[in-house]
Image (cartoon, rainbow, N blue to C red; front, side, top):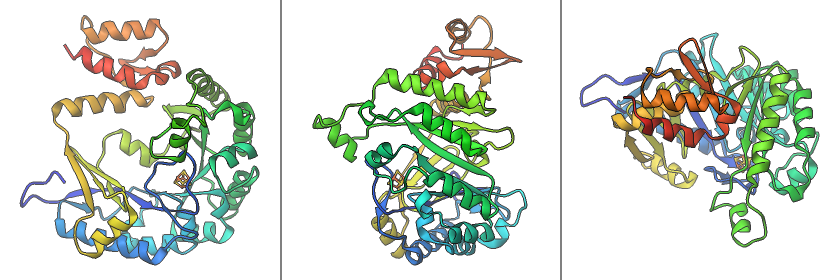
Length: 386
Ligand code: SF4
């Protein structure tokens, strides 16, 4: 992507593959989704094969001989059935997936992670499953439009483990409207009870083009309450860290050694290739992303043309801002600024206010600081290096 004419293609060791199909669209969902009763596996494989051929012809990036991470997200990859990951391995090239340390994650929803799917994925090489649970509360699940019931996450975890996949992550959503009556404390208790090594938490956001966005505009639903959002985030951080998880990124918690290697690659600014509709690719300084619509993406690839929608080239200022944002969102943090600078003064006020802490020449945001992440990143950037 950043290679000039005649330059050797950039090698990428991480791939994101988007699986767009969902059986129903959740009330809050703004992702690149195609609503279908089942996934269209032949069309998906054909489109990915075509896109990868296009990437090869373009010659800007090339998949490394051995990949380090593969992440199949969605959408609902588990809707594509047991053979999907075998077929994907053929598209990517089985030899590239042969490194014993490869982290290969696939996302699943509880209702479609059957024993056949989990076993099929495991034999294809998937060794990590990220489960979209979102809640255990029946009223909350109905409100969101999810298709699984209260026991769905527990059953799916058992199914994955029975197939030999123990490296599991579970997603929950917080900040749901109070009228639903969902107990966040109960959901956290049940989450901890699953004993999975990784947890991702997302605060509900109201996107304009969603069913929830319309309901808020029409006054049928209330926007997210900021105090509740804050209280639930802090409660989750407290419960999960007491249970032995490390809060290693603003939205992610892991038992030591089980941090997501794929996502950590994003947060370190490493290059990656995204395949599928809406997928993003990055090789500094260029970020580009594909057409969002599955139909438009598929038609572009079928016509042998690029499915790229747009690209941006990050200039030095944008790269500096991104480095701050990536550093502050993880527990790696940033190097402490030189004393006597405006940034050092700002950091002192953060430390006094409980928003950051410093040690060994680096500083990180605290949980309270992460609640204000976007604002603090901008303040730090504007304080300038001098
Ligand atoms: S399952 Fe996920 S991707 Fe599919 S509609 Fe719901 S939130 Fe969106």
